[in-house]
Length: 189
Image (cartoon, rainbow, N blue to C red; front, side):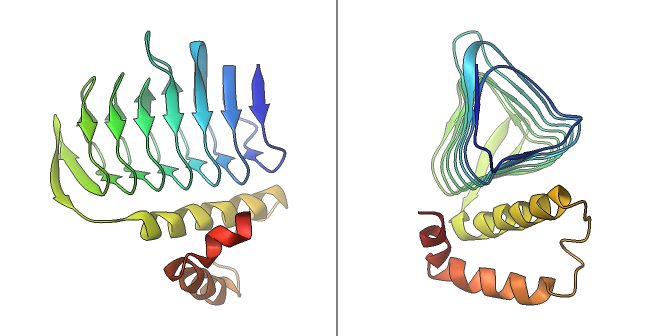
């Protein structure tokens, strides 16, 4: 059974099987695959699942992705938990039972082994991945999520110029100002 908020934009080439829930303002981009045969896949609000991402559940664990996350191109997330406000870099792999703390960044190409847990605000790199430094990336990652929300709205209207349109710089500056004071969160309530 799927529970997908009507505001979610899903590209026609994405395939979703099984128990999947996706909250308001999120987007699912071309050639994404989500499979939930045993446990569920839960995606929070304002999260983008980018091109060629593969989400699958583990034998013992669901896949849970928080609010305001960007799961970038070619990532594999397999039965793991991603906290709110995270950015998972291109071609990263996160395995069963792993937990990525809120406000973190996982570098492109990183490999997160089964069962590993990383604290909030981590910058995680390598294979196997390790915390390289700490930095609160909630706000920067939220801006990225808002940009994908705007892009999805444009795609829904048949436009592919969300980031090159005449008003983009003004929109981006205004959104960044809202995020600095967390006013963007009030817009969603």
